[in-house]
Each structure stands twice: as structure tokens, then as C-alpha cells.
Amino acid sequence: MKSSILVVAISGLLTGAFPPEMMAMFSDIEARQVPSTDAAQKLSRDRTNCGPTPCSGFNAKEQLVSTSGQNAYASPKAGQIRGPCPGLNAAANHGYLSRSGVTTIPETIAGLSAAFGMSPELSAFLAAYAVIFVGNPLLGTWSIGGPPPSSILTGGLLGGAQGISYSHNVYEGDASIGRKDAYLNNGDAHSLDIKRFTEVYALGLKDDRYTLDMFAQDFLKKSQQSIATNPYYFAAPFSGTLVAPVAYNFVINLMSNHSASEPSGYLDGYNFKQFFGVSGDYPNFKWLKGQERIPENWYRRPSTNQYGIANGFLDFATNFAAYPDSLKLGGNTNGVNTYVGVNLSDLTGGAYNADDLLSLKTGKAACFYAQLAQVLVPDAALPLVGELAAILRLVNKWIKPITGSWDCPFIGQYDQTLFNQFPGYKYRPKGPATNYMKQ
Image (cartoon, rainbow, N blue to C red; front, top):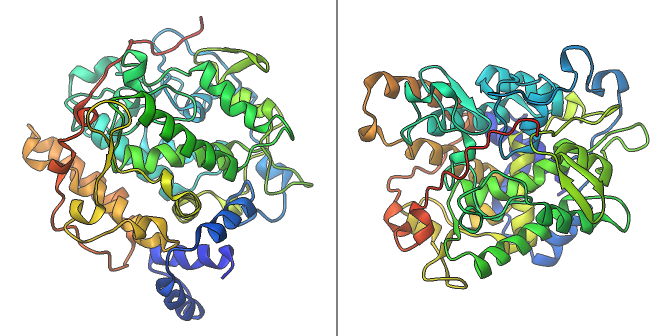
């Protein structure tokens, strides 16, 4: 079955609204087993920079991203927050997100759609998760970096609106494309490591091109490096198993430049450096802290093929099927090279297993992560009834609809005690209070 058909079917699974002619195809998808490694690696290599479904056609007027007027680049000023995600930093530096670095779910949806072509349901899910766990549920805000000045008033489930810079093992995790593991960097999980960037940049030197398959292999390499060097390495269900590998996919799918000759896009070294705030020529790079920007004359993916949950989970599943050793749920138990995995079936009381994430049945993977975001809400730990009500409203509005009307397996038991064997599980670094501004 062609990947484009898979995406249409999976989109139906997520929305509960696929056409009748897809019903027969749906039963075929459900019957599929985890593909062979060789087949999955070919599928991985064959993906374009628009993911499994190529972007057809090019509309220069519609796809050109403005970098002038209200979207002109400006370095962050004192008090304006920037954090670990180069795409979010670039969006804030160009006014697609609030230049303050503290944003809302509606602004996230509009800004990431205009700047990158991310779909509303995907940006809403990621933003809602950030508001709930590391943001301010009462105000509906979240920080793209460290704590905003008002964080002492109220906060997310971790006890304060600390932002994604300080969300280790909750939102961000180990084995990043450009950041050192927090434990190996004095608790700093949000600063770009120029050596790490240089290593991944070198992968595309031959053709001045970067691809999804190239980055999928790099994620496997980075995971293995973390296990071998970080005694506190830990891959949590959301931050480690989902967000860490998906961030690699985001770079390709959302930072590639599109043109009439290459409607599915290409990412070259120049654009890679611009988005990551890096200057200089290989290998003599310099990181310009907080200076990430959208390149001039840059064209995002088309609105007819926004990057959404269906695309994201199919890329996610393809990576893991092609390179199954990169699927990590667990961590080091007693120093480096002591990795032990957690059985997903044991964790979820039999509701899900690893094949649900390795296979191309991505509707089931979407079910798992949407439900995970809900079962992680510790109702009893919330000190204020108002906060609980606000969080439940966010869950009902932005997270539950992801699975549509599909009959997801129910997680009756989510046994987090399985993580107690990992020193990195409870590691909550704060790192330096940088909140980057122009140096």
C-alpha cells in the first residue's frame, strides 16, 4: 500500500471521518504486521522532505513566509524569553509567536501554521500539553524557554510555570539533535552544543542536503551515545519516546525550503544554520544565542499539505520500524551502559505493546499518546480546584478530540513505579537561568 493511501486512512482514524472507499483499506492496515527492517528502511529512504506524502504543486504567493514589517527579525530584548527549540525561537524573533516568549494555544496554532505549515491539531496538542504540565493553566499560557516573571502566581502540574527549558523528562528529554543531555551539561538542557550541531551538520556535507532518513539514523546514534556516556539517561514515554525523535522529524518537515522545482522541499546547510542560530563555515561554527531566524526568501510547506498528527505519527512509526533499536522506553539503571527497557504492555496494563509503536498502524500510536497526556494528570496532587477545572477544560478541548470517534484501547492501569529503577527518572535539573537575549 502506498504511503499516501496510508496517510489518508490514518487521518480518518484520527478524525473518525474517512470515506467509505477507505473502509476496505482500513482492514488491510489493521492486518499488517510490523514491516521487515529492509522494507521499512526503503520506505524511510524514499520519503521526501514533506514526509511520506509528497507536497504536490507550489504556490509562491501562498508559501512565502514574510520576514518584513511586523514579521521583521529582531533579537530578543531583556526579559524576552527564548529556549531549547530553534523553530519556536525563530517564530518569536519574527513575531509569529509573542516576542515575549510567553504564548497561548490560539497564538501557537496561528503562528506555527503561518510560519511553518504545522496543522492546527498538532500545534494545539503540543501547546496544550505545555500549558498543562509546565505552563499556567488558569491563564492558558506557556513559555518557550524558562520561567516567566509571573510564574510565582500559579503554575502547571510540576509546581510552577517553569516553561519547556526546565521540563526535563516531561517535555524535553535526552538524545537531542543539538543539545547535550542535561546531566552531562550541569543541568542545562536548553543550550545548543556547537560540537553536537557540527556533527549532525557534517552528515549533509556531500550533497548539501538533509533528509528524514539521515536524521532517523542520527537519532539512533545519539541514543546509543547517551546510553554510553550518561548514567542518568532516561527515555520517558512522552519526552523520550515521542518528543525527542519527533523533534528530528520537525527539522526536516518544517524547516525545508520549497520551490517550483522542488515542491516537496529541501534543507541545505545555509537554512539549517539560519534556523539554529549558527554562523560561520564548517567546522568553525559559532552559536548566536537566541538569534534563530527564518531565512529571507524562504517558502514553507503548502497549506494543502500541512504537517499534522497523521503525518507525524507515520514518520514516527517509519523511523522506529526502519531502526527498531532507536525505540527506547527506559534508561540506565546503575551507571553508563546499563540500559534496561520497560515493557509497554506492563506499563499500560496490557492495553498497548511495542508493536503498536513500531508498526504503521499509527492511529493506535496516536491513541496511546493522547491517552498518556490524560492519565498523567495527577488530579489528587492539584492544590486548587480552579486549576483542576482549567486543566480538564484544556484536556477536553485540545487533547481528547485527537482520537476522534475511534475506539482506543483503554489504559486501566498506568504503572509508573516501573520507572523507579532509573536514577534519571526523578532527575529535575533547572540549569542556568539564561533566557537568552542578544550577547
